[in-house]
Image 1 (cartoon, rainbow, N blue to C red):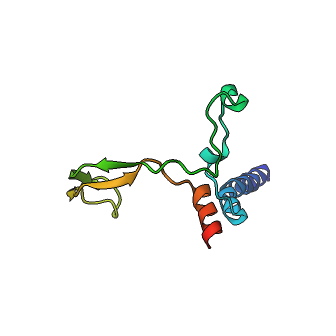
Image 2: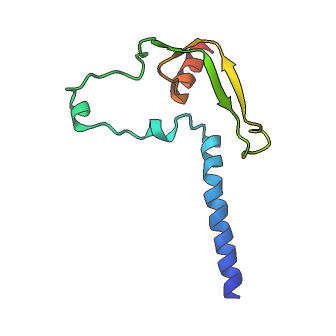
Image 3: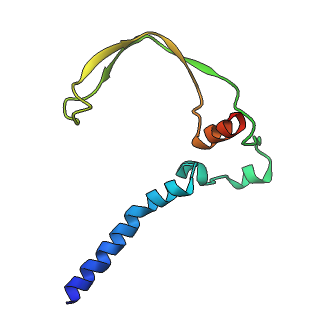
Length: 112
């Protein structure tokens, strides 16, 4: 009887833990754990460091990715990762800074 109760409690605990990410999705969480964690030093909080508001966009800075081959895929991976092959890409430009989920959500809200 005790084993059955333990199994039921354990099952409920596992189901609860597994449901947390789903609950966050339904709540509409748009920030990643890295965006939500505020890891500012005391110097930044006091204002001696340069302050940038979240509304201020970073300067548009593009970097050049040179042309050349790269290896895509793997021979040991899943069915959608195989086979390992060499692909050639032309030179292209890419933004230095990535767009966060929160920034994209603000853009969508502002532009519809």
